Image 1: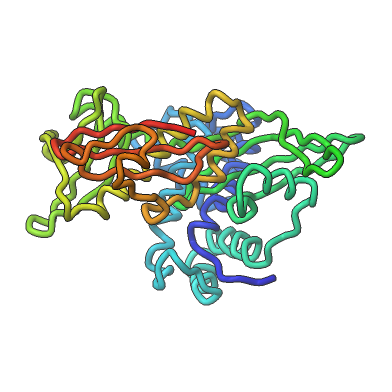
Image 2 (image 1 turned 45 degrees about the horizontal axis):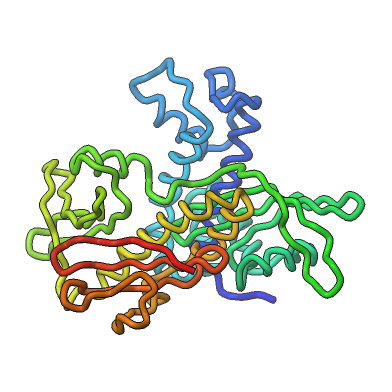
Length: 348
């Protein structure tokens, strides 16, 4: 059944189209040589490769770097066309992109139609994914379904609202009597980092410790962009000015609940991904399906110490949020302390 389409839903499909084309172009060695470049037909990939080679004529960019650069350019080109905002992508906006940039427009159209029409998913795969996460098919793109005997394998891409994704090849066990099929094994094929590596490295260079989560903020008085980060162990809040290369201690007040909820999304994903690592690829797939569309509104605020599984002290703690399950029965608790400390804990 046709439905409305979000830009965030089509970006992973566009990324996948770039990735497949770049892999084929590389001949399987994951690098784009000068010889490979001569075979490029796509204007999008040609521009991405040229941008990466700018000033470095002998460089052989990796497939991942080319795809990331192509997506960066695509996002910039889509911005003036997607005038109604990322919550809705219209047919008229697709048509405008076809007129302006035919290469990107064709990819956008294919992704738009795939999302809008909701292509049928093999029922065994659909049932197995539904067992992992509620409404899993709203996040998943299923391809390459193969059945041999009683075993089904498939490639599943779990999409995130920021345009990132994780791809897996999964093995599905035939259903026992009265039970839905189950994902029993898998391999991670690709996983977009939860935080852009360049941003993570830049923040760590300034604060001097690993960054668990970051939230961009705009100072209305100075019109300068800063990053509110949770960093280090024990974890504390820092305000980071990347342009100036400096950071300072930060703390929230009772008026900053919306900010706390937004930063808690990033922290919950970081902790949830760490937890899922223990369960292998099926657990990581489940994590991405459950958290790909996570928003601050999904958190339950804990105010009664008796309801906290990890401890809450109203005298020293400002906010505590409990996430929905991020893997199995595991929920993440994020506590912001009045003095600027942050605790990120899990419980089931």
